[in-house]
Length: 311
Length: 311
Image 1 (tube, each protein chain N blue to C red):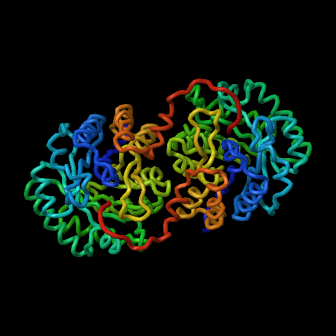
Image 2: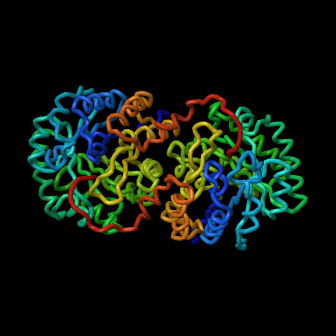
Image 3: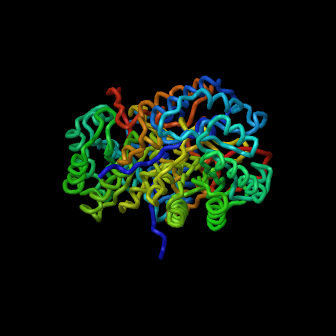
């Protein structure tokens, strides 16, 4: 039996870099994007077409898209917040627009300065424009597993929004985002099963942050419930300054390392991934959360040292 | 149906503190031990009766045992490396001696300066002495899931050693230790099932380090396979200077937080646990790995902030 294919979708260039204060030079972003597609990620969120004034570190989205090498089979995606962004994204020849709104009214208001109803209406226009240009649409639904301001987000709220994305926006994909690391494995399993059962043809992605140490456990719960696509960021970078309590995304190399050991096929060359990850600390000017980067792979052996203690 | 009981066994005072350079004052150790038993941990590895010269930060093991308040139902355990340590442990009225050897010859040699055969012979004498005094014996088997110097450790090697601990030493408990974070969930499940099936009456503990980000996932795999006892350290402190690549134990408050959300009964008051964890950084003089300590519990809500970005 072939090992089960799990699609790794790299979001470090967008969800990761947007949390940084330092501007990573355009050529370095392109080199990182190319290294990641060569390593074998299934999808790459290359940048964000938000206002360059709002997120100056991603102001070079058009230039990055112009510079990357497009590897056949890889989906080059970008975050698109509105029609103006969508027009730039079309120019940049993105293959998929990733639209964003929140399952929580408070988070939508604080993160996007709109009600959820206003966001949905905007998404409708962007989705229509994208589809008119033959571009796939994915919606990332923030706070699908809880809101840092409201607390619990009802499962029914998430399912109702998914239904509207599928029925009214005809999206190809939905990403359930655990924006501030509130998801836990039994919750992930239940919600994933419901979404998979109701919309089996939908491309479902799960997007976890490791805020409370449950990132990998949530990925594994999602896989058990039938999910096959996961966002992750190289080095585990990320976390939004406007989402209180947010920390980095689940770390791409940690997820790939664990999934390979468990007999899944993440389709990624871990050695190449680690080489790319090793450039991050210089690029960003600080340490990154990745544990594999520090400890090495499971079977990277050590020389025999001096004496005496542990269990 | 009652939630399934999972026993949390705190090892921070031993596996955690032995990795520190700073001597934590005896009174502070006693206060921490008492706070942890009050919080509800099932077992507490209070200290280590190794040579005070070898591990000076735990030189006060006898004094700590003399000072703690013994809460009924809590097992007060200590690491005991040899007969001299066992005699001190008996004086100190430990309820359980935790003996140590490694499943890997290289690790046993580098960690204990003995062959496994020599270690086993020593354990036999200590176990006999302990049982003669009505004291329970647990053996912690280092590198049960892999050795940082040798790589894979055969499952059969681990099972053969377990058989000898049960048959020849009549131990009450065995701890399978993932000393340097090499365990992965499918491996944990398989080994746990085999041990549980073969020795259903044995008190099996799983001891993970979070070196490669798989700590919680390994705990959950162990639970699925029937394990009910887990070592963990407050704040996630730990990691042996003599075990290359080692980092902290799985973090007690992270494990308790996750297990409670999933409907298990870890029997621990998370609020009290967090209060104890909050004292650690001052005691140790540095930050600790705990994510819950930084991010708070899942439903610790945040005020509504300023604007704009994440998924």
